[in-house]
Amino acid sequence: MNIHEYQAKELLAKFGVPVPAGFAAMSVEEAVEASKKLPGPLYVVKAQIHAGGRGKGKFKELGPDAKGGVRLAKTEDEVRAAATDMLGNTLVTVQTGDAGKQVNRLYVTDGVDIAKEFYLAALVDRATGRVAFVVSTEGGMDIETVAHDTPEKIHTFDVDPATGFQPHHGRAVANALGLTGDLAKQAQSVAAKLYDTFLGTDASQIEINPLAVTDNNRLMVLDAKVGFDSNAMFRHKDLAELRDETEEDPMELEASKYDLAYIKLDGDIGCMVNGAGLAMATMDIIKLNGMFPANFLDVGGGASKEKVTAAFKIILGDPNVKGILVNIFGGIMRCDIIAEGIVAAAKEVNLQVPLVVRLEGTNVEQGKAILSNSGLAIVPANDLGDAAQKIVAEVKKAA
Image 1 (cartoon, helix red, strand yellow):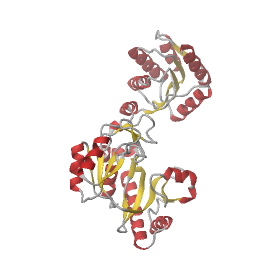
Image 2 (image 1 turned 30 degrees about the horizontal axis):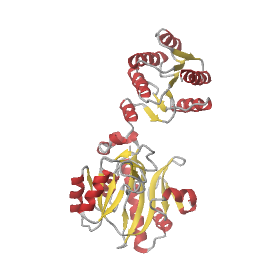
Image 3 (image 1 turned 90 degrees about the vertical axis):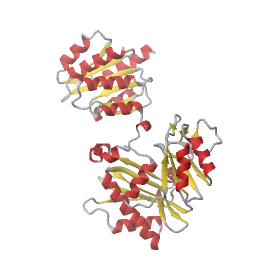
């Protein structure tokens, strides 16, 4: 689960991380009122979407010469103008894709004179199973370019969970940033509090870009991106309330209501599979046969008829889907339950695209009988290779 920048900064501030004053705004008037609460004379008006690259982004409705989603303002009128441009319009960045995202929230913060920008992040290193720090002197909007062109400028280390964050970890951060004296002490403090935030919230990523040195020689978090382990949200009801469902893909949101693992992709063959490994193999073999998967969808090991029906509807909710491949290995999951769900969903949505089903495992014969007696144009398959070949052939025949 991801949250907006203003929510991330409020959370970091609770753990003692230094952030500039700022207020969220849902309307132009709220943005203006927010600026009145800040000391000024410089304000920053920032579009709030779950994507990076906002400063270099462009609004679809404003033309190519318009400014991006992060703007400086020196007066209330300039704050008003920036808010008017942003709210309700679609911001396209390198991370949103061409569709962009509509801006429904703003963040108005106190302006800061920046002497130097750094990059600091904490994330899960899956290779070691530890929290890793990523540190660079090259913070700012072009960190992706730095990572690609000059990776030697990016330093990483991880923290042993048995010892936790130690003073030498803080010194490693300060040394990587080239800081000495009081600024080094501030860097050590920020890193330690970042680690506390990470563990205390079950975060999966905390990215600070930039971590800036201000003109009065203070370290300040000017932008933050925070994501959490969704599996741990039952422990953090307060954090779960920060979820902005308007920022999520509608089909992925619907899938989450049924505890389905669904990710929309750009292909044209819908996939319904039980088990993540089998789902990955299914997507691979579709591509091997010349077409592309439209989604990753794992119905899990113990899905009910209702859950399978919901999964089927979600797949068909994608207008790009030209055919569906169901690939089920029945262990805990019974093939007859899958078959009943497929038949119920296909009848309810009046299925109009080719459907190939491969079943194997528990109650497989009962499942096949349900499908064959359904009266629906379901193409059976004997194995995964056979299924992939058949769905590709059926889609091409229907085109």
